[in-house]
Length: 264
Image (cartoon, rainbow, N blue to C red):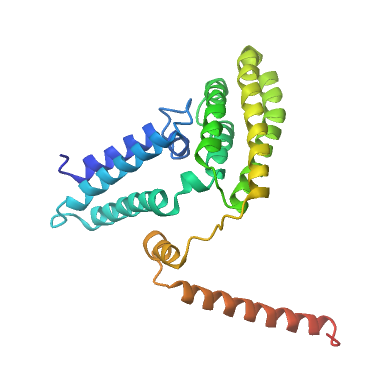
């Protein structure tokens, strides 16, 4: 078993690179830029178990000789790992929110073109490779998320429509800029575009039929406040802050209106 924070930190980085390639690209880890990763039920469960294993090792580390910086790093790592487990076990995002899947497909492809971290041709090849993953990722969304809340399904449908538009505009321009890759890009884009269109229609129907609530409940919300966002607030405290802000803003607007027109 690893005995140091440095070893466990390296494990976390390797885990992200291997299992969350879209997030890895955003973090500047480019070993899997040609993949979106697996979104099957089995993959979700395996990632959750691996996350718990790393968390357990971090919790067992002796902190007696750690520097202040290392103590902070350990806490941040544990915070993120616990949040990941909470999302899986309590929020059940992989079973409730299809936008996570559609967003991964759309953002995972788009970020390769937005960030100039490698020559365009290299990034375009990775872009085509990720496009080839899109149909399976969206098939997993339709298979795994069977009763989404209406709001989540509507967002997923809107994102999927955006995926169609994105490919209709991006692939022709990229092919024109890189004619040697035009065939590869266009052959990858066709099935991806069809998958985005099918997924948009699927979740539009799901939204229309859904009566599933999207709220997560007081206990889960307060866990997020304290454990993920590190706020010493209850949901009641947050509600009071919001109501006070609305009241103060309304009063300011009314004063401004009277200055503009005294009859108001």
